[in-house]
View 1 (cartoon, rainbow, N blue to C red):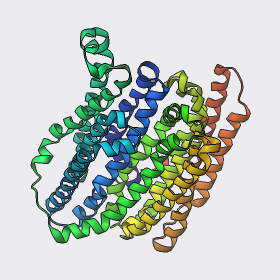
View 2 (view 1 turned 180 degrees about the horizontal axis):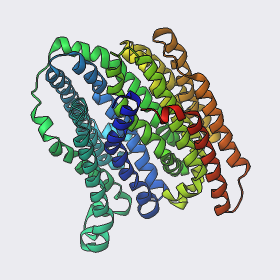
View 3 (view 1 turned 135 degrees about the vertical axis):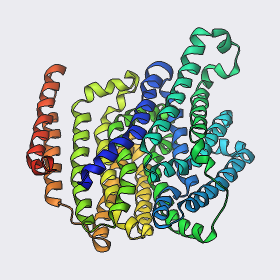
View 4 (view 1 turned 30 degrees about the horizontal axis):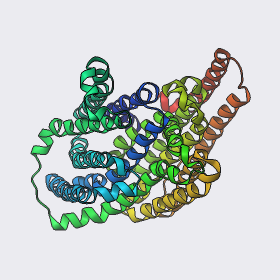
Length: 487
């Protein structure tokens, strides 16, 4: 395929099978949990604990995924990069698990789970397994084995979901003698099965990745390791700060909400509504999987910067389409979560706008990744994390979870602006700002038009919103007709 943008689109679609399909399947657990199994308080605990999982997973992988791609492409001996990076993560993971076991009681007490320290142990195991498999998955991407990558991702999630159904539906309903005589099925403890099912799903990837794991030989090239860490640790800081931006609100809400009696319930409501930004998050994630190796490969070509500009243009079009698609049809999407959680729907447009800014920031990050100035990216991410923490602490007591939503948006929007202006001084890409601003203004007009013409009966309102979305798509197609119809 001659056109690199269309090739990237094709790769994004293939990797989408390995990212979008598993995450879509995983997100099916949200209506399952919120409509059939857990109340707002129980789902609040799940939301909070998985926030810790996300943060810990970033820490344990040490930024090695991106560093692996960088040096596997530069180093003639890619397997040496594979062995060194995976050996390092293995050591860190074992050390992490030992610390959790040794200080389990203290850690549980510190985060107010002293009565359920088993939750902490289980999420530690999930993190450990997922950290170890990160590099074998990266190897599949390096080898361009997108189909195998996607199949393994999908199967592990299917296994996770299957065991959720077995533990939470099949056994209690069809084998009551098991649930009635098991201490694990105490009413307040059924959350444990969410983590057990996850461990089984994560462990299945070890078997599914066996061919890649067999390639691994424990060895560390010290010179190579220094290069990997020098490149990867700033990426770790970026990832850690980014994850703080993503999940710190779910942790801080419990501690700073004015009504402490309902705090964990509010976390559950916010967490469920947050999940309605699923399409935006999925698109950004599957784009990242395809774009990261693409950006590095294109850097060698003469028209690389022009290509990056075109990528940004189309990325903005797609994220605006998703933003409008979810908000204009929110009356349909809200059924994805239980009615008990609908009180939090007002955060959805804000969270979607935040994710749009995050997606643009990821596109802009090409300037510090290609110039080996990942430290600059780390500084921007640290700034964003500080904004997230400070604004959550300030806004949560007065605005509740709406304050968390606005903190999320302000954080990513400010990071996007800083990266844009800083990047122009280091590695200037001539983005088509006129088109980007035009499409953004068009998207805002369509969104506010749907609000202005709101309040009708559902069928009429959906018809109006559909017409508005078609107008948006029609104007985009008219503007991009030359690109769409060229070879």
